[in-house]
Amino acid sequence: MSGEMSSDGYGDGTRVVRSGSTPPIPGMPLHHGPVFAATFHLGDAEPGADGADVYARYDNPTLRDFEFSLGGLDGGRSLAFASGMAAMTAAFYSVVSTGQRLLIPADGYFTGRLLADAHLRRFGVQMASVATADVEQRLRAGDFPGARLILVETPSNPGLDVCDIAAVAELAHRQGALLAVDNTTATPLGQRPLALGADMVLASDTKALSGHSDLLMGHVSVRDDELLARIKGWRNHTGAVPGPFETWLAHRSIGTLDLRLARQAENAAALADLLAGAPQVTNVRWPWRTDDPSYPLASRQMLRPMGVVSASFPSADAVRRLLAGSELLTAATSFGGLHTTVDRRAQFGGDSVAEGFVRISCGCEDTIDLVRDVTSALRAVVGG
Ligand SMILES: Cc1ncc(COP(=O)(O)O)c(C=O)c1O
Image (cartoon, rainbow, N blue to C red):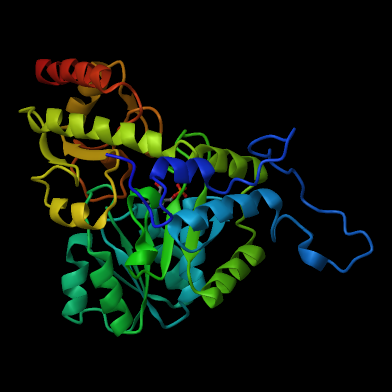
């Protein structure tokens, strides 16, 4: 399932191990540690002379290494942020102005909608939303004239619907809009939106990219220099820059992304099959199951599968029984980490889903252990 060859001739495992690494120096670490500094010695030179660092909010060595790595993987130039929401905020505010229109996914990460509703609206930005599965057809029908920025999230979270990035990019550009793609679920190994015509990639690197459920991080990648400068200006002025320790941890974690995604996808394939065969579970979604509505597009557009599955249990109580009957499933929100987690989305109130709807983030446990554990937990659901 892994090992996609890229244009540089290396497979994913090699690319992430080497991603952003500096040439080896005898006696020095293979991966340099973080540089902890808010301010840098200026000496008697002009600030920033010869590219010297000045102040960590503008740039710093740990951030540069991480962004170089991200840019290589996304096929553009990247700017890291203190969280995925900080990255999304930067994308919105750097592009959309008062009186302009922003189109967002109706079924994407719900805090994106809260950000748009609670804040952008106050500044006179007009808002519209559309379901991921419908965005292409609605744009083709001319339903969102005057949109300045279109955000899609594919696969969408938590419903796992997919839209055609290349087709949406063409439609967006035809009407003078920019297209941003939230690539959190796919990661840069699973999907390269910039190569498909998107203007911006944004992501929560809190999820699979860093993958250990121990930090918050986000990034935006673009190809256009002017857009890059605008987003960097936003970050400089608002201060949404990540700290060096988180940045270093995230960079260090990229080296195992290929391995983690491969195991997560293997576990997702097995759990999706198991759940699809369980009478107490309905509407199992994993875009790489051949009978999933997202499969035709996902298998054409994405480079590899990911570890997130969604499914519906009859009630909140049935989910409680599943968790109580399992040793390996942990109740937690977020996704993409080492542990297999179950997130009953209705408890957060932001998504329009039934009480028993869950997003399951498959971790890196042995597939055989997970299948055995969930098989017996499913018996507890019936037993209750
Ligand atoms: C698809 C998606 N985008 C953005 C975000 C926001 O990221 P963060 O929590 O790192 O701010 C999330 C968080 O769950 C997400 O799932």
